[in-house]
Image (cartoon, rainbow, N blue to C red; front, side, top):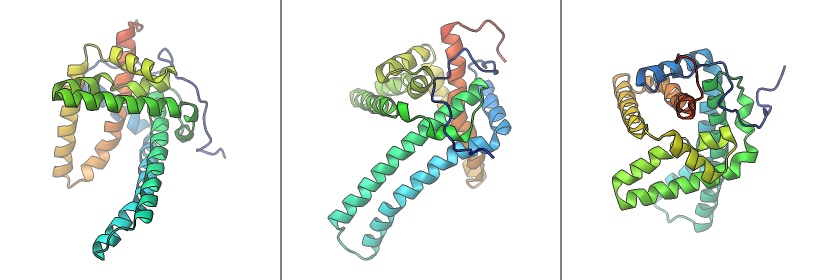
Length: 246
């Protein structure tokens, strides 16, 4: 029996491969495709989401526990212990980011209709530093955009929405991936804003109505829609798709 966590092939996917046709950039079509992908790959999608979440919780628990202990006993935090737990949490955040890259790779493959396995969570080692650099640059650009005015910050965050997808899928550097994301979102930033607003509002309503349980069902779909949109925009913006949209 093969090991599901055995690393896969660390190579870019490429937009011209895969068995799935792209969907039009419409809310219903995108959500429908994400739901289709989820129902076809329930175990894989849940594993790709829950493993990084579990790792994040495991690494943040000691820091939270120390804070609660000092607060309950009305004690001043020990500097050395607090520093140690913060370093531990930072290490956990880096591990979580590494696993998130693998999750993006899995969801990109699923959006394309390519084979995917849980081992892909571990196969993005060669892209970790470029992706980390891109994430830092994205954060700085968005931060300064929000300092100038709220609207520029929103526009920048939407323009860089697919940076990590481009970096992993196309094997690009940080700056190239940011430029590619900006190109892909040209003419679609307004749609992305409305799309995320509508989905966020729908998720909140679903969570309230179902006392939180509905969000557990919505989470996989919310996690998959970005890969679905990336797949569609790769075809739309490259004008490389000659068939009909699914």
